[in-house]
Amino acid sequence: MKTKIQNKIAINIIRIIAGLVVIILLFLLGDILIAGVPHISWHFLTAASQSFESGGGIGVQLFNSIYLLILTLIISFPISLGAGIFLSEYAPKNIVTSIVRMAIEVLSSLPSVVVGLFGFLLFVVQLQMGFSILSGAIALTFFNLPLLTRNIEESLRAVPNLQREAGMSLGLSKWRTVTRIVLPEALPGIVTGVVLGAGRVFGEAAALIYTAGQSATNINFGNWNPFNAASPLNLMRPAETLAVHIWKINSEGVMPDASAVSAGASAVLIIVVLLFNIFARIIGNSLYRKLTATK
Image (cartoon, rainbow, N blue to C red; front, side, top):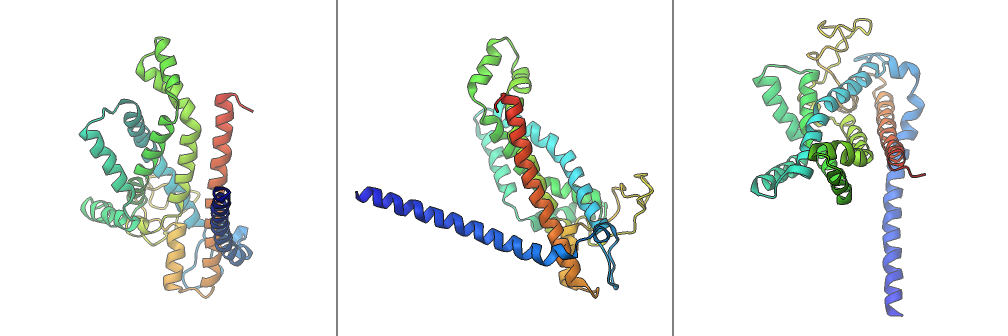
């Protein structure tokens, strides 16, 4: 009887803690969305920002954030995929592998501002790349690489060994077994991790302040030549992202409607991150049902 009472008390405490977490999250999201959603409009999402006048938007900053995210994933995902496959399927259990794993863990725990300062000293100063989209994308790659690698490794390890043994018994090589059997089975978990990591990268600010810069140059959306200085695709131009823009507004506040712009931009950022999480669930479940033939 005493054991049953203790079990009920423990379960109720866990439920209360879980409820508190949900309440805190809803309070934070509700406060930001209630304050910011009324300021969101098509003009706000597409217009250029203003420094000393009211009525500016976040169009350039929103484009920069999406562009930086795409470049970061293009750079980091192939490297993470190769590292995850090696650590899960090929890496021997020795001291070298242990050091690699420890390096990944340490790199994943580094504060983003440290990654930003490293990118500033190496790419902006030493390599003379300046404040640019390319510097920011490489810095975000260092920030995102260990998280993606660990996610891919864990997704591959979650595949039962029977799948590997079945492939080898059919005469497939180790590589074909991994690419044709193990990788498709782990794909839903990998996609979920990539989308969730993309949401985290999208909201990153500290690493980009020192690498991509704090200014949004006037770009011409009618010129898509990546070698032109006014092109949105130019990799060497400074690119203030949405998260950096929010930080800059709250630290400087030089426009008359700074509070409204900050609230609207924060709401857009939260909505995009929420959409990343929702799409991660939908895509992951859809791929799992398709690849495992479950309803």
